[in-house]
Amino acid sequence: MSTSPARLVVLVSGAGTNLQALLDACADPSYGARVVAVGADRDDIEGLARAERAGVPTFVKKVGQFSSRESWDRAMAETVAGFEPDLVVSAGFMKLAGEHFLARFGGRYVNTHPALLPSFPGMHGAADALDYGVRVTGATLFIVDAGVDTGPILAQTVVAVEDDDTVESLHERIKGAEREMLVDAVGRMSREGFRIEGRKVRYGAPVH
Image 1 (tube, rainbow, N blue to C red):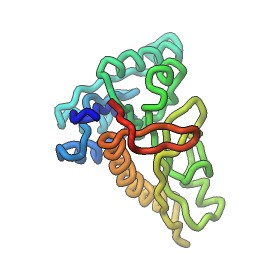
Image 2: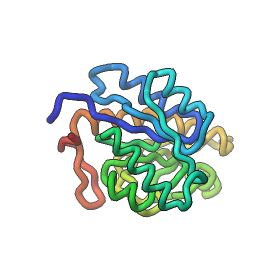
Image 3: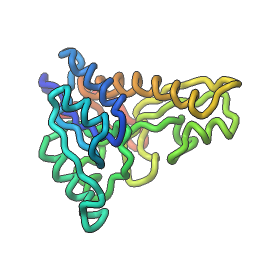
């Protein structure tokens, strides 16, 4: 396995709290990774500002700047590929990857979801879990595929649902657990490597 840090490209659409957690972790050489670029689908967001403060290159590709969603997806894939990432991390990126992006980065593109997949996929994981009345929920880190929150699961973390929870209070606790899970799993993937065997992801094969 290569001893050089794994190269991460992180994609954001908002405040970038998960990005910040990764930037903080990467400051320790023993973590085994570094963020080489941060991309976004819109301007003037805190996620980009966090990257700029950390001295990390940034890029923005807005869907509306392109003639089609396919053209945008192709441009995103080309731009990300230019940074030669070992892993691409969706950290609150609110756009679905298309076939060109997945053709380049399938098996190396990870995303988080605020529920214990395969339960409660889609845009409202915390609200759906609360409405259903489950006693525990959590967050999932998975390999992105062509479906919606359907890829092989890398890691999960459990969050208890309290009797007085609102969607907001539950989601805040999930986000805290999600950040910890993301940092831990990306570090392990970077240091140890990983492989995908059907629906299961195993640590231990190099990413380089």
